[in-house]
Picture 1: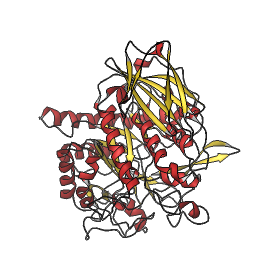
Picture 2: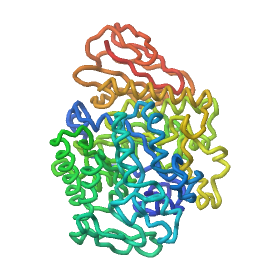
Picture 3: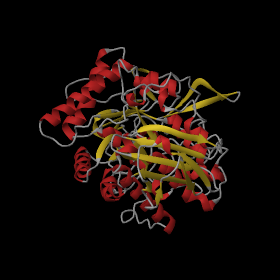
Picture 4: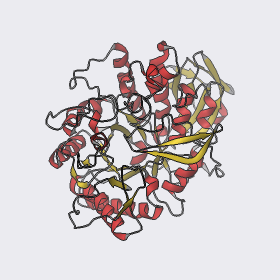
Length: 538
């Protein structure tokens, strides 16, 4: 689901413009409001700083089911929001698993797969998104069947991929919930108000929590899914999330106790598309009484696109300081938080289209993608990629489509990222040289991240975030990796203070193999334009 920001006098207002996941919407999404962060805790207190938690190493690939790949001609919507042909289905995802695995990711998130009672709610395009379901225990026949979903989950697990489903636990379709759960439950519902395309779940009634606890455990126990992405998590109270999280944890533990390898992770990541204060209050809760352990890091995502492209509002060119701004620091979140950083998703504009909007030099297009991906790779905690990013996907002529009534046509911000999937050997897509190079580069980058715990669970020691240069030391007990990023189109250098490092003889570039001998009090590191470097202490 998506929600827009309202800008008032150059500042972001507290009000939210709520729009359905595919129902048109407000257009651009400016940067999140500035936070008033609490004092930073000691570094060791951060959830993904040193603890060996599998969720910190998640490298997730998001698929929007209805717009991805058509693998079954009998299971199509044929209509929807955005530029795709809207014929995606579960078989198309099954057919694409080898490609997904080749990226060296280790998880898949599927947008909602549950039955939306298509044709009964008055908007087939909205039904195709899956975000207004009527039956949370049956797969939408336009996507496939329950048996196909089980095949998909098993096939993904065979390839070493976790599977996360999209949990829309705060609202349902206009027709309500069509039948009781396997244990005979129904949630209580209430009106979403004039113009709202569905009904809200009434968590003031105990039957609602009981119903969605059953939903949450059913797909873990019966299908072996590895967790949930939680849509519009602010629609539930923290106590409700605590109860559902505990239910998922019990179901995952039961599978582990039964000797199952999969369906034991129990990862849950909330979507609160707001600033850090709201994410902390509406998803994480306090560290002495946690609610969710992970939420998408929208604030830092806006900083990333402001540094290397432009955000949806057109704001960009902010330099490296915006990668460590007061409103997007990890210290804004409680100790137990695992922020999940992404570049795009089905509601955001693709990075390639933001580059077009910003009128950047086309020659820099591929290098800007690599720079952005490197920043994700260097961040501790889970990260997520959106399908097509591996090929630098964009909508040709996007910049010329912004304005007028383009949202209703699916040609600008609200739906532009919902394009057909590009999968070599499956969809007939043949990548260009640049596309092949970016895909291969990303695959190697993900393998590099997976092989170096300092990158995904290392304590972050800040070096620099000013001008055109951003830098961290990422460290665990066993290794230190210096990450430096040049966000500009001109060569830069950084004088690395060696006193911040442990003893060693050299820094070795983990991508090029270049060896930088250490001596004296500092080391000058050259940074090519739009390039991130990973330098491991040896």
